[in-house]
Amino acid sequence: MNEIPFIDLRSQFKALEPEIRRRIDQVLEHGQYIMGPQVAELEARLASFAGAKHCITVASGTEALLIALMGLGIARGDEVITTPFTFAASAEVIVLLGATPVFVDIEPDTCNIDVSRIEAKITSRTKAIMPVSLYGQPADMDEINAIAARHGGISVIEDAAQSFGATYKRRRSCNISTVGCTSFFPSKPLGCYGDGGAIFTNEDRLAKAFREIRIHGQRERYEHVRVGVGGRMDTLQCAVVLAKLERFTWELSRRADLGHLYNEAMDSIGIRRVTQRPDRNSVFAQYTIMVKHRAALREALSRQGVPTAVHYPTPLNRQAPYKEYCCGDCTPVADCVAREVLSLPMSPDLADSDVSRIAAAIQGSAY
Ligand SMILES: Cc1ncc(COP(=O)(O)O)c(C=O)c1O
Image (tube, rainbow, N blue to C red; front, side):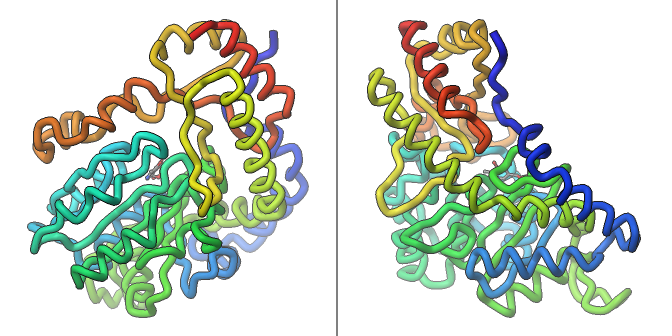
């Protein structure tokens, strides 16, 4: 039995091959591998897509979060509220700057930060709230922005590494808070062929800071006005993302269709799944279900050519580098969800019949 790809980058490449090769060739011809014209071209295209005033491309999603925090002046002694149920980068950048991640538990159905628990964690040291738009679906950003506004001086950074192209109340992910950060890691909804990322904001002052920090704190060449990083995105990777934009709108609608097809299939066989709220459109970076006998189901599916993944097996506050920021039994929902989540194959080139085959394999496995 042929194996369904977990993420099908090959079919996507085949569909876009002439455009990808044309775009890469352009860069090879002009040879400006760092900060070539494709960088500004991509930033303009992405800013327009997100409806944001500024887009600053950077070396990765992790770098986007780091630069965003640096530009906001987050430093030692500050606290940043975030979710424990995310990829390590979300908390890593906070700790790297000497600040403290404050973990707030998640909702059991969306797996996003539980907004009703945020306010209790705010102190005089809270400088930012960093929700993660997990699996491609934004958290309740209006509510988070309102909490931040009530407490004055708190910024909201959307970790939108998994959600470029999603919407929240008709606004684009990456443009629904002070700052939005995304990733172009190859398997993300909009991916390049290596590492890449971008920061979005409507504030001129922040955009200027992010641009300076991205390039060693330089304002002019060899004039360093602040401490920065080597955080630029390569011209070649920008060219790849430009090519991928050619069919991104189609990919988004295909992801939505597949997500709904999966929902119907899971509901009909009685499998619990991550819920999508009616006021937002997920990009289904992952399609994730929740099952009690996960290991056995994974094995059964693998035997039938259905690869799976676990995002994430352990909440960050249970992992060695972040344990010290945990307050005992403070994230019971994340602890429970981490034992049950299972991501199924998802990418725009998945066929409807693949979804049926996966559902039948789950049903036949009797878990
Ligand atoms: C939620 C989240 N934040 C941050 C990152 C980091 O992005 P990158 O791998 O591009 O550094 C990822 C990537 O997996 C992610 O999923």
